[in-house]
Length: 130
Image (tube, rainbow, N blue to C red; front, side, top):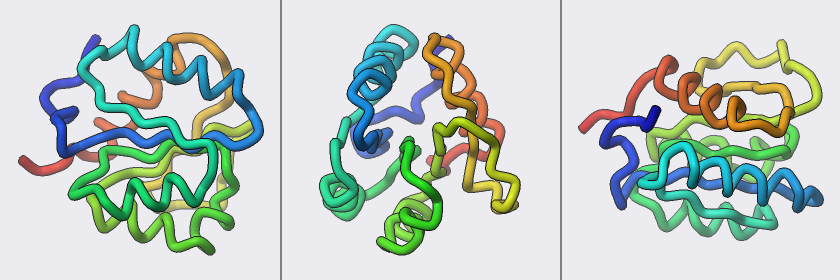
């Protein structure tokens, strides 16, 4: 089920996956299958993702396998939140320490259900205005 017009050209999904090409490629393929209209950009480094988020007017979500502490320390979390986005952390375990609804934690599993879970979580946490 595709997500409504929240995926226009000014609102994208940025994926930063370091050191795991398999999950990065799987995520990109699954987004294309699940929502061909989604504007998804893959970054292999945090610096590359930071540049993309910095240039964007709005960001729907940042999806990453990086630890929250690293995302915060780089200033990436605040930048994503300023752009109206959520951060989805794909990890091997839940991160109960974050209670901010802009942070979404999902278990790492390589099926199209991951994309559906991510999109449902973003939508449940609140849609971007406009």
